Length: 189
Image (cartoon, rainbow, N blue to C red; front, side, top):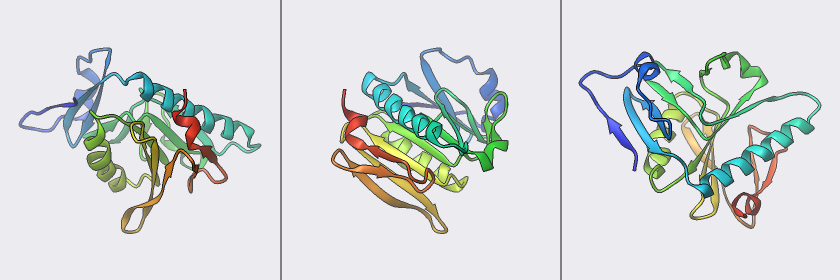
């Protein structure tokens, strides 16, 4: 279960950098509050690896480099009070100025979260609002238990569901044009 650590005033990125972090836990700073989640389980790790590998292979096949993929733990600094560690991050070449030596400072083009029972509310509600507010173009919610991936795309009115892809489907993306992913492969051993 994720635990929020609160104080009267909001924490900042500077506080986050000096926080005494337990090595087997992931911490994020959302709205000036620290959130901790236990290390991901094996199914989470498998699904994350398979998605990331498929995106990397897709990008390497292209003759023109369209962007770069990163995976947790990697800080995405959206503001001084909002620092997250999404499971998978894609930054397009056009947006590559947000990649620094230490972190990603700004809104990536695509963020992917692998949902667990401990992170479901935070991923589906809190992070969805956060990513929407900071202009993340596409957000994938990977539900290992239900074996489905929901792809949300940013419109002028906020996130809209582009598709809910189940094991019999092939996922496509607006951000990663021509990318196709057989959803069954993400959830198979």
